[in-house]
Length: 335
Image (cartoon, rainbow, N blue to C red; front, side):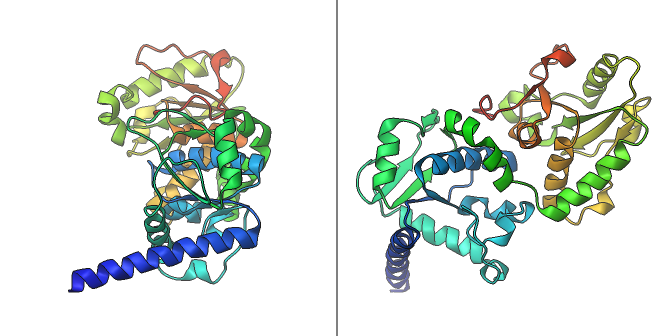
């Protein structure tokens, strides 16, 4: 009996949530995209959010990015809004309620489950990408026609892309997804200290941890391999003083970088591991160059502040400063 009662309550809440989303869309005067599936970590969430914000700007949509709730505190806009919306709106009271974001995510996700998947008609749409995912073109005429005629659009999957509109709206995307103001301020202070006495600051993302096993360990490199690349890159700046900022998901011992002018975030300066991600990403974005294995984390750091980056793909890669380019969020599918 209890099981039946719970099923009835969940079903009723799901339908109420669906009705509320429809009403919200009507009140806002635009269709609403709802994201509830959490794909990967911080970099992946930002990549997906950027492409869908560009799509929203193109088609006059609103985005409820509830899937970003566990990283919401890291950005200036999302930490002020319990629903992580674009365009930005503040909910100063709701965001302080313990667990409110997670409850909203569950309710909206359950509401989406009521809608048949991949039926591109009607007021409610539910897109679900397959496995393995293929790139879904949000700039296609059929998608644009469907979403502009709908009221609520549920989107599950990571590979939604809109390259052309992202290039057009990149400044607005960067502005909306900027770091929280106090994180940026502290990182600028750290960067100024790191730059003391040097001419060029190079960010190095030593992604180890999960990369030891991901993709068969093909993108895992030992610290000494990074050091060799750093020395090679330093030699390409003759008559300039080169310093490095090290960001890593494993502890890096200072003695590993003997002879190089290297800096890391002092562990005691960061209040939590979650915030350390925001600090590392922001500091990478304040460097002059970024050296990293393929990763949406370092790719985003390149994009957000237009810093040239070079992605290391094999242990035999030769590093040439002329090969560094700003990541445009258009070459990271599958990372």
